[in-house]
Length: 155
Image (cartoon, rainbow, N blue to C red):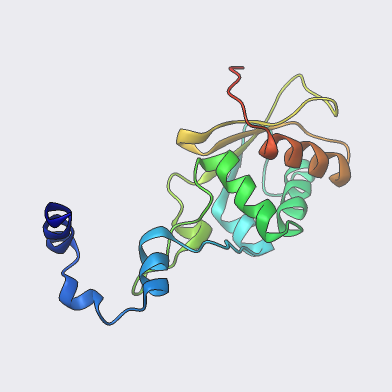
């Protein structure tokens, strides 16, 4: 424990951290445990590619689904898409959230798939392969089902 304390003190001098409450330190180091985003955040800080643009109906349905998510659904989606259930923290003058997610969340059109298929991801690079569903309702159901599955299936 002493070795951890010494190493941590080299990176984050403890004398400076004493001014923070434990909850503030947790947010500073781990990000917001209840991630939030707006429609503008999603449009500005995600990268639609390979079949989607910022104006694509399929991408805009995706934005609608994300905006309508509850706090627990947002955490599940982030865990599914990035491997982490929180977004990067804000620190000093550096904004957190989707703006500070690196690599950015990339959304591509999953080819040869329809309403019956599910989205898939490459979490290491935040790469979401999303079918061009015919409605927001179908997209929401498929995306939430995928985010709540616990498995490892190669595709």
